Length: 291
Image (cartoon, rainbow, N blue to C red; front, top):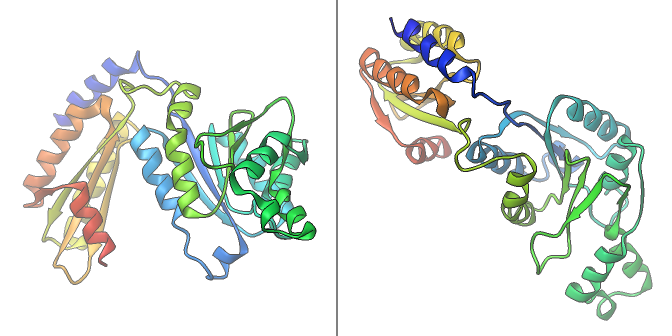
């Protein structure tokens, strides 16, 4: 009965459905692959997309290799609407993201006078660096050039821009504080570019159910639940997360807001079948972080 009723909901909303914005995140840096640093930018970006109703489809981590960066950007650009890169835009020899992404679009890089001027005004490097170090510093103002390139200066007191190519690939620094601050300030621009509004009917909703039943005990129920959800929308996802040592598991029910009534019925059914209780997203995150 629930499946038939849910199908009616799906058909009723079909006529107003618009495509989701599909996103990908490219983490660039040998230091991530060799374990020197821990990537936190991809997790921030995942939450960022979720909050905006953007469908994050892929997170890729690669090293500082030009051919690999070009090939990965080319593939991601063909499959997604909104791609961000993180890392590889510093002043050293292995910071090659700008030139690599530019090459993927058949573009070149040259010194950007606006960026250089902001660097001079904000950082005052002439007071601190000798000529050789100053040359390396301004290497960070050597940006992709072309009709499809736009530099977004979204934070007044920062000289580093979000460099966007074809309103698709957005190049950001890898330093988490800068990555997060720039993306947060970029939200109004992003909403305008991708026609995202507060009333967008395709924002996600997520619910969590806590149960003392084991993964093996809930597996069959969740499998048939997911099978029924696919009939309604491929965007409805059922997940399960073990919390070893805490004595319980959690079930995630994720879908689009246009299926809100159906999602809430799924929650009721899950509570009943798994003898569960609802928990907040904040509680689930706390349980997961303490694993």
